[in-house]
Image (cartoon, rainbow, N blue to C red; front, side, top):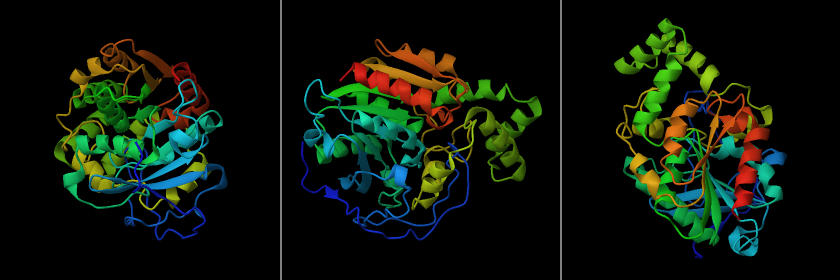
Length: 355
């Protein structure tokens, strides 16, 4: 499954990023990108805090452009790191949320690199990947196809995948195709269908003061989500259900050094300008019929206070044969950052069961 066109990046390059970005909404990435990343540009390493530096980096060609992939632990891809040998620890690929997010929110998962290769990547038009800015690329199928491109480029015969939020949609779609060598799946705070997300959001809104919940609904309905009133109300929603703890300053610094930590145009095109209801191309998205096709062992991992309420997650998990669920105590939607010890521990134990 090798791909000779995959380009390892020169990790000795010390280019400085040309722009940092202001805070915004959605998955508390809150970043509006100010720069683009051209195909073949070497990733700036000087901006990456020492604890988070990758061991290896690649530029992988995908449909529509090229994407950035980084690896820690295990070796250079599945083959040379032993991950392609049955019974040995296989690499785990993390699929970020958004749409339009980037890999920074998975930095706590680097703790897993003591046992296996940890692979983080940025989807096209995000993070350190190429910014093509062509909405024709912004389809579920094309984003799912990036996983096969990564597997081919890095020679990953065996792997685990973990997708969170929108990344869980990508992971579930991929797993439903029953690809060979897929050992296990973790779906975190999963967007599986827009109707299930919106049903969960209605429950969370009902847990806010009635006037505040109505403010959020009204502005999302009227398309006035840039208003100060909406921003104030949705920030309270985020504080309860999205990110309940402050971001580690080192992780925030890493995020802020990314060329495009959050692509707002991609997000609003696919999901919409609001948080609790979709008005974009995903407004009728429904992968629930695909769930019974998933054969790889599947774990639904959800924060106690997640935007995706645990009861709704349990309903979705029941559609996947043999799936299990875990609740991350005290965590919101960004459980990996809210309670990294519990979240990483659950992922570690799950992957180890199925090597």
